[in-house]
View 1 (spheres, rainbow, N blue to C red):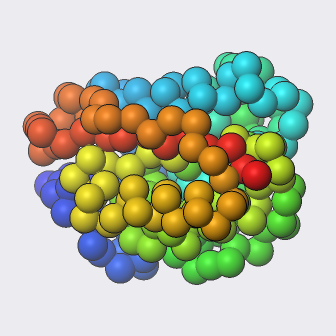
View 2 (view 1 turned 90 degrees about the vertical axis):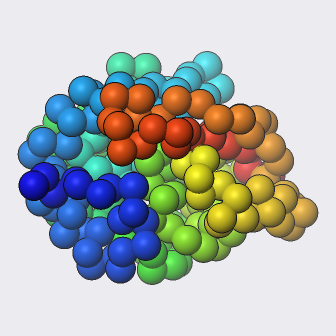
Length: 209
């Protein structure tokens, strides 16, 4: 039995169990995701390339072992902070050399201890599955982002409606905190993992006002 078995159902686990899952999975995580055809890090970073100064501060929210960070570095971003609550994953992220700093932060406990109005971009890929209060999470990302910043996140298609994700996006827009750049339809998620057959991912990109 693998630690990631029944992964599709783990979105309802308590935060301590999710943390333990990713601590236990950290060593094999990158290899597993690559084998499953996971391209969300590349897609997410593509929304920042050409729109955010490569030297400006970027927050990788829920950085895990550093997959998104690797693509940020490859795209030229040099001032990236990674946050996660899996200590084992953070150790690997730090060892990858793609982050200027990493910090243990629990995104289920808001507000985070990070500074307001600081980041030129916030990217959160593959994490919203475990953050059931979508609106509160989006508002926190807006707090962390400076005016004009780009905020990018992904949400599994099966949770998009269940978590009322579009309604949360609309509420943050109505509050004058951001304006939508694009909210996509369904895109491939983990095509090489049979457990996720029929499950897709959607991306949201926004500009902080």
